[in-house]
Every structure is written in structure tokens, then in C-alpha cells.
Image (cartoon, rainbow, N blue to C red; front, side, top):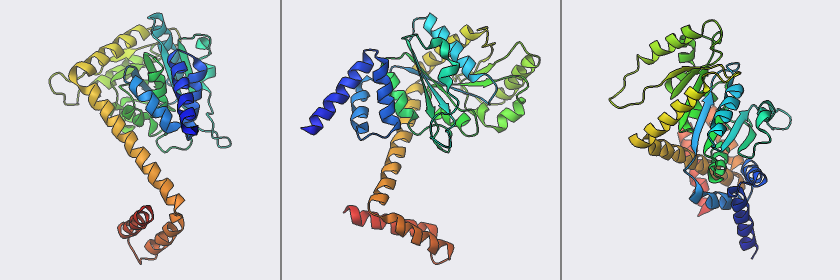
Length: 325
């Protein structure tokens, strides 16, 4: 009986989110972030309603204007009547674990727009910089009927590259004075962008950044029909050039669908999420059966040269199988 009441409450919450109630959307994302016991039911209830939103990742080094560009894109999409959900991944507070930068404050112009939902999510120490719950939060916004889901990264380290695994389309932002094309290539971002945007294009050096980008991208081998990444210039603060970015995003979405790449990318994303859930479940089982003590002993044996890491892992897995069996 308790289970049926729980399922009914989740069903009502999902129905409210799909009806456009922001509080229900926020509550569902909170359940995701808090690893609620209801999470399995939430995911199952959302599944039939997903797959419609265009997920766009925005990345780039700190200072290139990601939040300003995100705000400008929101405005452009809203002018076209599209509903927009935003997940702004912030560094975590070392004290509370919560989002530190507060992009909702920086995007306050859209706070009263019922067609926009903005949520800051803490990275919470995840090595890649993106919260482990980001894919499931994306699913909430997708199921809630948002036409576009923008995921803005911290813009530090691996998060710049990792967002490409989550998005249908990845936008890489650069700006003059933030490092030349060679430095960008070293960061790996030239390998993951679908659309490149040189922001702050009213500053000296913007044409040079665009030329360097094009020169380096031209080195890449492309088969016939493969997407050719555009390089666009914007001044996000004033909105100049943003409509061109929206047009490029729509063009890329159409190419993804016609080429079959969209299905491939989403299958890859689902595969990574399934694997992450399985690994997390395995870790929980180790804790439940008390194998952390055995793990310590095995680690000591490896350090002392009495065992090797592969043999120790086999022992740990055999022990887990024994307890489960």
C-alpha cells in the first residue's frame, strides 16, 4: 500500500512538471540531486516523455562570457516562442557542497519568465567537473516539455571536454586575449565542438582568434557529408551575432537527425549513464556487506608486494558474489 501511494505521488509530481509547474520541476531535480529513494520511480515515470528537447552544452575557459552568452541565447530562443531549461554547473562550496557561483543571479533577467527554468547545480567534487546527476536533471527538463536544454559548464579542466558526452550539440566559446588557438587545442576543446563562437568580438584580436581556429579545424579529416563546424562572432553583452548562433544550432540539430548521429550520440550518453549507475550500485553493495575492511587489507597486501591489483580485485569481486549469492 505504501508503495502504491509513493508511486502515485511521483506520478502526480511528473504530471505537474509536464503541466509547466516550476515548483514540480524543481522538486524533481532536488530528488535527483539528493539521491532520493524515489529516484528509481521518478526515472521510470519520466522515461516515456523524454527525447524531444535539443540539449546544448556550452563550454569554454573562465572569462569568455559563458553566462552572458547563455542569457543571450535564452532571450533569442524565447523570442521564437521556445521554452528553455538551463542547468548551470558551478564549483561546489567546500562547506555546504552547494553551487558556489549562483548563475541564477547572473541570469536574473529571465527570473519572471514562465517559459524559462534555471537551476544551478553543484559539481560536488565530481572529477570531470559536471555533477553526476546532470544527465538525470536533463531528463527532468526534457520530460517537462522544454524545447531547449542548455548545460553551462564550470569551464575548468575536464568539464570543458566532458560536456560533449552529455549534449546533442556542443558550443565552444572563446574570446580574444584568453589564449591562442594552440592553447585551445591543448585543452582538447577543438576536438569536441560542433559550433565555435568567438565572443567579445568587438575587442582587438577577435578576427585573429577566428582565423587560427579555422586554420586548425581545416587540418581535421572529414568524410563526405560530415558536419563542418562554423566559427561565429558574437558580442553577447549586446546580443550581436546571437541570432546567427541560434541558426547554426538549428542547422546542426537538423544534420544530427538526418545523418543518424543524434541517435548514436544519445545511445552513447545512455550507455555511459547506465555504466555509472551500475558502478555506483556496486560500490554501495561493497559498503552494505562490509567489504571496505577487506578492501583495506587487500590494498595493504598490494603495497607490501604480497599481491597485485588485478588479483586483489578478483578476490574482492568473488567475496561480493559470495555475499550476494
